[in-house]
Amino acid sequence: MLPALVRKTWRDDRLALIGWTGGVAAFTAIYTSFYSQFQGAAELKQDALPQGMLDFLGIADMLSPAGYLQATIFSLVGPLLVLMCAITLAARTIARPEEDGGMELMLANPVSRAAFAWQRVVAAGSALTGIAAIPWILLMIIVPWIGMDIALSNVAAASAGLVALVWCFAGIAFLVGAATGKRAAVLAITGGLAVATYMANAIGGMVDGWHWVRWLSPFHYFIGTDPLHTGWHPAELLALVLLGAAATIAGVIVFDRRDIGV
Image (cartoon, rainbow, N blue to C red):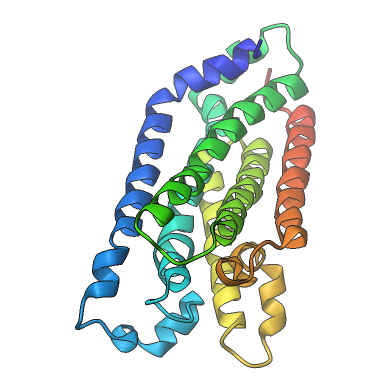
């Protein structure tokens, strides 16, 4: 039986969860299903996008199945969509009830601060995992259905990386919310960090002498290993998971010790 607070969190966030689920599913299904038309269009050329743009996005080509999936699902818009979801839902765990004045009522129940924080994390984390796994589930169906010539194990590796990336940034967002109690801080700091690290990964792959910068970016561990071509990289996935777990544990400790006026 799930704790009451987990169930309450899901119930309170149900409209947002339904909306994000539908949005991510529609994005994945629509863009992936366009591959046949994209490949068959006679006027499409490899130089349809400037080479500099392809390099910035880390895309070797857009006509192969792996290149198309990376360009449409895993390079920019897909991660942006699921990270927006992760940051938004993580901001609801601690920061929203604290700003809305509901924290005192929640903590009046016979549950410790740490238990309260962990239950909120479990509720948000499980929901985020399900939403981030939607591309994985749909691609396992759509890719063979439309005849894309790419190993499903490679698609699964890239999809697992997307889930691990979400865990990483959700943990960071939770830590910021637990430390500040401000939704604006969660959105600004975590969103800014996501943009900065994405840029670091992109620029590190383009500019000579700056390749070391990529190792500071979670996006390198997610897609920099090119899993759509090279398959699974467990060490990189584990690094993302451990970073998210460390941030989450730190957030619980900070929240447990912070004075929030109750």
